[in-house]
Image (cartoon, rainbow, N blue to C red):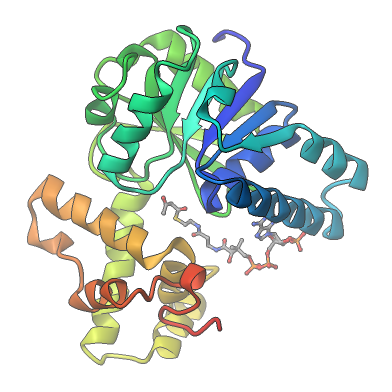
Amino acid sequence: MGSVMKSIGIIGAGQMGCGIAHVSALAGYKVQMYDLSKDRIEAALATINGNLARQVGGGKLADEERASALGRITGSADINDLAAMDIVIEAATEEEAVKRKIYAQVCPVLKPEAILATNTSSLSITRLASATDRPERFMGIHFMNPVPVMKLVELVRGIATDEATFRTAKDYVTTLEKTATVAEDFPAFIVNRILLPMINEAIYTLYEGVGSVEAIDTAMKLGANHPMGPLQLADFIGLDTCLSIMQVLHDGLADSKYRPCPLLVKYVEAGWLGRKSGRGFYDYR
Ligand code: CAA
């Protein structure tokens, strides 16, 4: 067993940060969220409350559990409020420069024994670790979206991650009632190494006129039993995130089979990022 962790800090109150806060609070951890503005924190708390309420509505949770989980989550725009946390999980934008800047700010604030983890979906854990003051207490804890529903978490060690850190992270994931798989530190790990080329291929299928958006999604939902069609899933993940993962695969593995589809590039350039921007392959406005 790793050492007992009681509090979780979360950097970034977006889709993933909200989900990680949600499941951690439900498991009994005290959660401290950090983002750049109080408005973002307030929006995150409202989102988390809404998602907890969905679970109450679906009979998966009692209303008292919703209220007590919510009561365990606080947030602020002051990074110093992460000082007492046992594990801090960075769930910021999928851009290496952004993450490096955050590590430079947060490392001096953390307890020396605190674990710093990243929810990166594709970047090198070893390289990110080198931007911290604690490569041995740094690793990848990669949640899937939507976090409250998806059962898997990928655990990724960097070259310097020590065994106690790994065990603590594994214990934490187990307490969330999720299944951990171990992936080696290669671009996009396991899930996204397989999922994103499938999504990229679906976009090529659209780009080349093989089928319409609806035809492609229906084909994969009914023909391969996927819960969502690949284009709907791309909108759900965020087209900017899809593009950055394809770029990491393309750059990191130097194989043309990972070339991002030009249509994906164009949509991102247009600001059509999927659900979060109101428009992607579907219109959400
Ligand atoms: N919080 C809490 N509960 C949620 C939720 C959320 N954010 N989203 C959905 N749910 C619950 C719903 O309340 C519902 O609960 P009940 O069964 O109790 O009613 C249940 O989940 C199913 O939801 P819906 O009925 O609304 O819709 P659905 O049946 O179509 O399921 C889905 C929605 C779970 C998202 C499903 O479509 C699905 O599994 N899609 C694929 C998701 C996927 O592939 N995720 C991985 C993305 S890749 C990734 O995350 C890695 C990365 O780094 C990019």
